[in-house]
Amino acid sequence: MKKLAIVFIFFAVVHFLVTPQSSRPIVYVADISGDIDLGLPPYLNRIINEAEREGAGAIILRINTFGGRVDAATQIKDAVLNAGIPSVAFIDKRAISAGALISIACEKIYMVPGGTIGAVTPVTQEGQEVPEKFVSYMRSEMRATAESRGRDPRIAEAMVDEDIEIPGVIEEGKLITFTTDEAIEFGFCDAEVNNLREVLQLIGLEDAEIREPGTNWAEKVVRLISHPIISSVLIMVGMLGLFMEVRSPGWGMPGTMAVIALGLFFGTQYILALADIIDIVLFLVGVGLILIEIFVIPGFGVAGILGILCMLAGLFMALAGSWPFVTTADIYRAIYTLAGSVALTIIGAVIMTLLLPKTKVFGTFVLSEEQKRELGYSSHASHEELVGKEGIALTTLRPSGTALIEDERVDVVSDGGYIEVNKPIRVVRIEGIRIIVKEIK
Image (cartoon, rainbow, N blue to C red; front, top):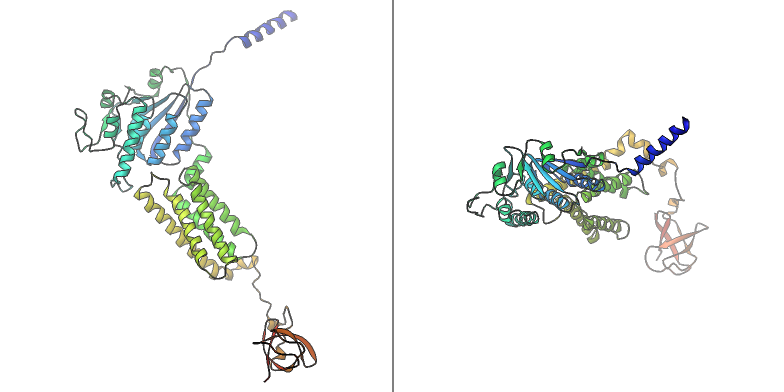
C-alpha cells in the first residue's frame, strides 16, 4: 500500500510539472487624476516598466484631469508611445488640456457617458494665453501623436489652435472639446463604457488580474521636495551652510548640511527633468570661483562676482525647467523662489553673525573667552619696554638684521632704507614680534 502511494505521488508530481498551467492575464491600471505635475512621469514610468517585466496584457490609464504641466504631459506621452505593451485610456469623466495629449497617445480610448476630451491650448497659471511659440509647439505635439495612433491630426491641432477651422467639426475662433458621443463620431473615442470592467471586456481581458500600484515613498518624497516652498528652504539651508563653512576653519556640520540640502534640491530637479548636468556644473563652478576668491585672490573682485552669478544662474535654470517647456509663469515662479531663498539666506547670515555668538547654545560649541595680554597671556615676548631705547646696528639692516640694545642682541627691522653697521639706532615701535628701528641722524 505504501509503495502504491509513493508511485501515485510520483506520477502526480510529474503530471504537474509537464502539464502547462493556465494563468490569468495581468492588467496594470494607473491613475492620472488631479493636476498633472512633474511627480507623475516617474510614477507612470515605473508602472510601465513593471508591466513590461510581468508580460502584462495591457496598461490602462484611468484619466480624470483638467490638465497641468506641458512638460510632464509630454514625458508621459513619450512613455506611453514607447511602451512595449498595449495602452488604453479610460477617460472617467474628463481629459482636458494635458490630459487630452496623454489620452491620444494611447492605442485605445474609452469614455464614460457625459465625458469630455479636448481644449489643449497652453495657458499660464493665471489663465492668460502663452506666446505663439508655445501654441505652435503644442500643436505639433498633438498632430504627431494623433498621426502615430491613426487619428485625424487636423482635429488634434484644432484642440490647440482656435484659428483652425474644420467644416462640419469646428468653426474658426473656437477650440474643440468633444463630448463622448462626438469623440466616437470623429474617431477620438473607440466606445462608450460605464466602468473599468467594461473596458476589460472590450479589449478581451475580462478575466485578467488587475493590479493598481500606488505611488511609493520615494515618489512621494520627490513630489514633496519639488514643492516651491520646500525648494526655497533647501536652497536657503545650502547657501547658509556654505557661508558658515567658509567663515569657520576645517569642515563641520554647516558644510555637511549644505551638501545634503543642495544634493536633495538638485537631485530632485534632475529626477523630474527640470535640471540637467549643465545647471549642476554651473552651480559648482560658481562655488569654486568664490572659494578661489576667498582663499587665493586677496580682496573681492571679478572671480567672486562671477561665482555668485554662476551659482544664481544654476539655481535659476534648475527652478525654471527645461526648454522649450518654460513658460512666463515658470520664469516668474523661479524668480520668486530664488529671490525668497536669497533674502532668507541674508537674514540668516546676519542673525548667525550678530546674534548667534551671544547665545548659550553657541557658547557650548565655541570658546568665547579671549586670552588677553592684560591678563598675562601672550604667545611671544612683546618687547614693548624697548620702545624709545637706543642702540647700535651690529649688522647692516637690509631692512632686517641684528642690533645691540641695552646690552641685548635682538633681531630688528629698519623703518625705511638700509642702515649701515655700527650706526646708532632707536626703537620706534613694536609690531607683533617685530622690533622696528630707525637710524639716529
